[in-house]
Image 1 (cartoon, one colour):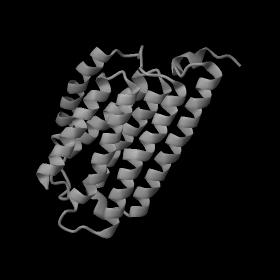
Image 2 (cartoon, one colour; image 1 turned 135 degrees about the horizontal axis):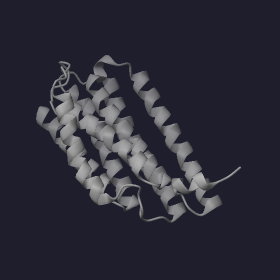
Image 3 (tube, one colour; image 1 turned 90 degrees about the vertical axis):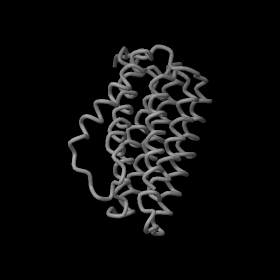
Image 4 (cartoon, one colour; image 1 turned 180 degrees about the vertical axis):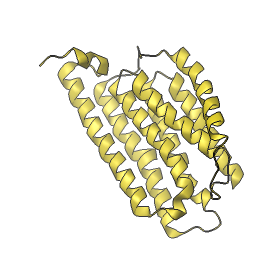
Length: 214
């Protein structure tokens, strides 16, 4: 079970690095979908000894929402916008790729002194969760396109979830589903906002919105 969890953690690291270095929005959406499917499997791996029915339900819902519904909504928005790449981010892709491994090393250093709960069997969970959270924050502040910032929000939530799911047996399922519902509403609302911004202003560069005057 530990090897399987480590594999998913390594997958999260690789997908985060792809997100930091890729300018193609369709690729980024697919990568976030892969993250969602991987995270959906985690509840079953952490509770492999006692697979309760609510964990199966949670895993199915997470895989469906994070792996298909959210990416589907964003892919539909992307087709409506007819935007292919994030061309001029605030921070270039070379610097982003250089900052990624540095942030990963920082996360390992920060988490090295943290006492881990007994339920977390893999030492990679905490640093990778921190790295995923930092990647999401970085995408939000370093990219201009609103759609990429929405992806950053999803990655940020993936980081929070990847740590919290390790304690899934101790948390009420209603809380987890409530968080998922909040994310769904946020993605839906942001997708609508992006569509209307593009329709009114012919672009989705958030930095250009600061030039508007009332």
